Structures are given as structure tokens and as C-alpha cells.
Length: 337
Image 1: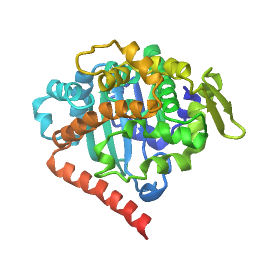
Image 2: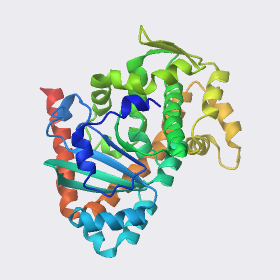
Image 3: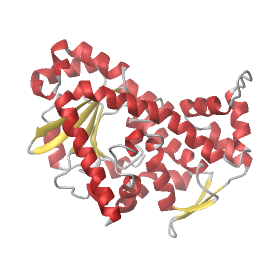
């Protein structure tokens, strides 16, 4: 993982971080408030800043944060840090968001996730929610020396490359690859129909090609599966059944299981490896992988959005949803004008 490229963070981010308890294994900022995007999210100066805080002990962290930032929480705060942590870990995608917070003159949203839950998502793609955020350029604001977390972050990027390879033709451009990677965590996401600008993926990639190269360049150069011509910005991969089977076998466990569920006829009960071998020979292999991704993302995004009504509170949920719909409307007007 290109940590050197990601770890540069401005004073503004660190000042915002100073308002929260310090026990963080990882803190990063992401989204249109951090990296410039094309389209309706191009107003970077006034965009909401999005953060994720990863904590080893969420009960202790929420307990301290409630004392410092009581007004950040919805009505759930009266139930205490243990209930908040239970809601965080057991519902949605394992992350608890406080949104529409004013901090140091900026509007922010921050999610809290357990380190162990994040590592599981990075390695296995249980939800592909925060793992999906980390497949795109982010600003690392704080990070400790957790070897397991660093290894999982790296593996998540390698898995993203492999999944994208399976959905691309034999030869393609860097932009094709990065667009496929950026879209992994939006596969089947209902918010791409309601609330999010449909051109969102391209709007993320086009202005940030250099950041994607920093993130994935070393992985592509070291991968035995690809011929990477960095100067020309072109790539070639092995699309033989043998090559695709090798890639399928290295996909995260949950995605393999979803592919098996999609392809395994009732009563057959084939093991995952047998199913993946069949998919490797299928001319629609990429479409099957895409269906597997959607089977992970769709329920995860719906559960997390429903959970947001309780973690943000009804009033903030309405305001936040209206902002999303307004952004989608601006994107539609931009396309039709």
C-alpha cells in the first residue's frame, strides 16, 4: 500500500481530529471534501468532510466521546456507550456515523468502526463498505503500528485489482482499471439509483488519476498477472481459463461464497473451488463476479442507510438525504443542459 503517498494530511484535518478521543488505530478522511471530484461534487471548499475513525475498544472510545461531544449523537446517547457499540457492531456495515457536525468551521461526518471489524472487512469483504472506501484515494490522518491492520489494508488493494481484472477485457487503459476499482463498492448499491449522482464513479476517477497511480502503481508493477506499461498507461492480462481461475481463487472469501451461491444449482452442493473452476471457463465470468459483488453491497448499503436514521436522528436524516438528492438533481441538470 502506498502509505507514503496517503499519509500527507493538512493541519486542518489534524485540528479536527484533536476534538476527539485520541485512541485511534486509524483515522482517514475521504470523499469530495478531500479529493477534487468532477460534476456536482466539484465545490470542494464547501463540501462536507467525511472521516472514519477505527478504534480497538469502541465502548471506551464512545464513553469518552460522549463526554466531549454529547451533542454529536442522536437520542441513542441516552442509552450509553455499550448500546451505541452494539448498534455499531451488530447492524448495518459495522460502522456508526454521526453526521452534520460543525467542527472548526467545517461541516463533517464521522464514522466509528472497530479495528477487528475493519480488518475482517478488508480481508473478506463481508460488507465491502469501509473496505470499499479504502480502495479509493483517502487521506490518512493518524495510524498506529498495527501490523495486522497494515497488512489487511494492503490485501484489500490487491483484492480490488484482482476483482477488476476479472471484469475487464484482455487489454485496457489505466482509467478503465481505476474506474472498475472505484465502482466495486457501488455494485448493486441502491443509492446509485436514489441519492447518488450516477456518474459518481467517473467523477471520482478522472480528476484523481495521479492519486490512483500512487495507490496501485507498485501492486501493478509487482503483479505476475499483468503486463503494465506505465508510460503508455496501458495494461494486458491473461484471460485464459487458467489465468481467471488463479484470480478467482485469490478473491476475498465472502465474494467467492456469493459466486458459489449464484452458480451452484439447487441440490448440487458443490464446493467453492469446483464452482470457481466452472466460472473461469465461462465467457460471462466478469458478469458473474459483478453479480457476486452486488450480492454483498446491496444488502449492506441498505442496512447501513436504514441504521443511519437511528444514529443520525430523524431530523438530520431528512436533511442529509435532501443534500444527497440535491446533488443527484444537479448532476442530472448538468447532463441534460
